Amino acid sequence: MGCQTEISAAAIGERPIDDHQPGEVRGASGSVPRLPAGRSRHYPIYVLIVLTLVYTLNFIDRIVLGILVGPIKLEFHLSDTQLGLLGGTAFALFYTGLGIPIGWLADRANRVWIMTAALACWSAFTAASGCAQGFASLFGARLGVGVGEAGGVAPAYALIADYFPRKSRARALGFYSVGIPIGSALGYLFGGYIATTFNWRTAFLALGAAGLVLAPLFRLTVAEPRRGATDGPSAPAPALALRKVWVHLAAKPSFWLLSLGASCGSIMGYGLLFWLPAFFTRSYGLTMLQVSHLLGALLLIGGVAGIGLGGYLADRLGTHHPRAYALIPALAFLCILPCYLVATTLPMGTAAFFVYLIPAALQLVWLGPVITAIQHLVPVTLRALASAIFLFINNLIGIGLGTYLIGFASDQMRARFGADSLRYAIVGGTGFYLLAAILFIAASVRLPRDSEGD
Image (cartoon, rainbow, N blue to C red; front, side):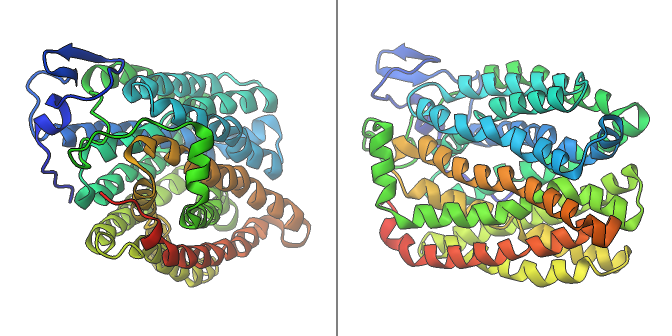
């Protein structure tokens, strides 16, 4: 998988730390994390795989609504604007708002416990989505999914940064990020299959139950590492107050440029994840099952390849040339524009599939480079909180606006374009990729000065 680690069991589990954290046991030499029996130097790989599994389920539960919009729209008589609110705004309200306080807590408390509670919470509300009786109750259930998923990502970024050294960190974070295309693909596949075989309610119930089973396994097998374990022998400084963190980040323009650039890309990334199933159904006449297979293939092949490419290039180029962390995604976004302009005009077939495959890969190249750059902009004790602030900006704009704007634009153009209104809403939205590329290029100028040393 391209992620090699040279940290030993001692580096992650047997070195003393300065503060006793929940979930740790104290020994003669200080406080050490409680690791599973038989741990080895390969244990970080196991942790990375489990974290990726949880992230995959995170995206399955987040994305499955997209493949189910057809039957939900018919049963509840909803407009595209209402569906956009369900797919983005409902989820984003608490997901973004709670991310920062949870990131603050994760820099001080046991991150594994936080993620366990988050997993159980969003899984319970995913199951509750299957019991909705209308727009209001489904909106409330999606709010609850956002509450849970708010604690699922920023702590994981910080855990990975403490398990993997700088030279392999982008590949590790890139590997973790394959949970996005795999989870999205499985959300389409499982949702389409279960809804076709049973109904849309069963899809939510089954996926929610899977997360409730995974939560205790995660808690029992993943250990909390020492903070900064892979960043040198010096003890990390105490975590700063939230106000001081904002002051620290305010002095680093690259953080804000990276955050806004990723947000513009996410407007289309999340918007397309939600609306492509409806687009293929309306404009190409495909069935729900056909759409789930098509999008599943695009995301599994293209998405995984794109994330792997981004992580590889970031580790290869970014270690010695920090500007590459921003220039790699800028180039990827610039290449997306002509692909979508061409793909949406082609009849569905082999040619269209391969044209769609290119942007499916390129739109996820940014993850490894940008997330790694964020980790390098702050001291080790601020990584979870900095990640939470980055996610707050990215998701508030990306999730909160992406699905809503495309749905709203589709409704506004329906009188003129009919069933093809969604096609033109998607084409018009690709301008956000150009804006993202401009912001990333601007960020690349500041990155060498803003990055923290080892």
